Image (cartoon, rainbow, N blue to C red):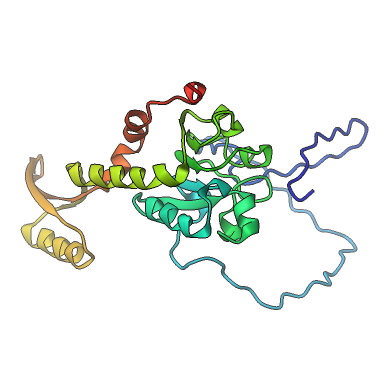
Length: 267
């Protein structure tokens, strides 16, 4: 339907029935090793040979970029951002997070402001990030179908009655073009103020082994610190690296920096 129609289709009298589910529509469950399925081998009789020939295969998107469906934080923009140039601010915001990516509504994809690979919605990608920023997105039903299952939705829109506020945990009524640069500055300030949280990544049994590991980490741009501890097997060397600061503060930042709840956005 090209994303223009949502329909419920009921087939009471016909069997078998088959259904397909788009990726990220449902939250993935934890692996249960105690469960197993039955594999049934089936040989197709009178199989039809495909007439489709693969001419070439191309990988779309920037090398090393995080796919929008895999991102933990998505900074999406709609027509309310005003122009393609303002999407550069979204890219700057997304770059402040370890697993951030840029998204967009169908309207801005049609305008050519962002590539179709970043489109969120029924005719784009279904995403379930930890935080979904919606800048200047009104919240058409087709767009909501692709992002409403996000853990936290933060909406910024000039229209207090925009449908996006109905699915948002936090909302700001205002011009996204004015709020976005202030938000970027605030996150940068938090990043500078935050003390790093160190995580042990390697335990060496000797000082020589610890020194070699530190050299490898340093060569790859990591800061390190070493702590000598005692165990029942003798002394060991714990090598730690600082975790990304914003990764530790994603939820606390969302809770403290946005005091306007979506239900109160019009006040």
